[in-house]
View 1 (tube, helix red, strand yellow):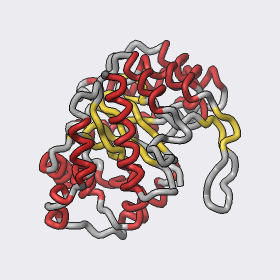
View 2: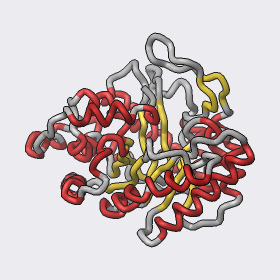
View 3: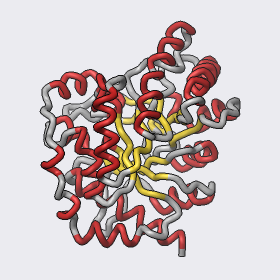
View 4: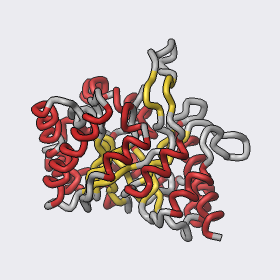
Length: 326
């Protein structure tokens, strides 16, 4: 299941997931493996910081094996220092100050920094109709406020809904200008991820951001989301990519505007290398832009457990990061 299309299912699923008490996870960090401890030590000299994207654990969250409120503690147990939330896992809590305060308390207690919230299902910011775009922009206001409450530095949005390439650029510039203006007073960045459609075309994204000169607006380049058009889902629910954009060219085009980076991963070989993405090449480009912020691990593979995939991605980033420092 893709992250951007799971919103209606998530809202129904979360209603049936019981909250797990904080006490059930108080010793999780103490049970962290020696591999985790060693990996954290090896990450001390990296030029970036490591965060965990919540979507990496979407199977556990959907099934109820992991509760949203325990995500920060889970992240700590896996050796991360920052957390990246997905709004769908607390869709109805954007204005619930008590719940948000509990999230903040859990993160603080786990020694985790709240980094950003990935926003899906709040309307089409690149839609050709001005009224539709205005509603989409306003739908994001509550998430700006939630991000501010939690101490995040950003929200991630989608530039969806465009039909004509040029018109979608103009619509995106208008929406981002408006939303960033609202977010400015809260000190929140508005970031766009390459996330399907026009936004997965690096040249198109470059055209959008070349027209923007806004301090709190930028990109969140994702290593793997460079499929512009997907086909119908097969029996396993996988949608084949019909129109792919060169991922390395795309990263090069998005990175100059980056205020966050997502290290997407799918498959690993026996040596711990990602088989579909050259992480060394990607991180070399990240380093060359002088980026020193969080790099979020987002494992989307199916051949490993979520924990194993997260650890494999984390360890590969640390190994590559150390290569680039030496």
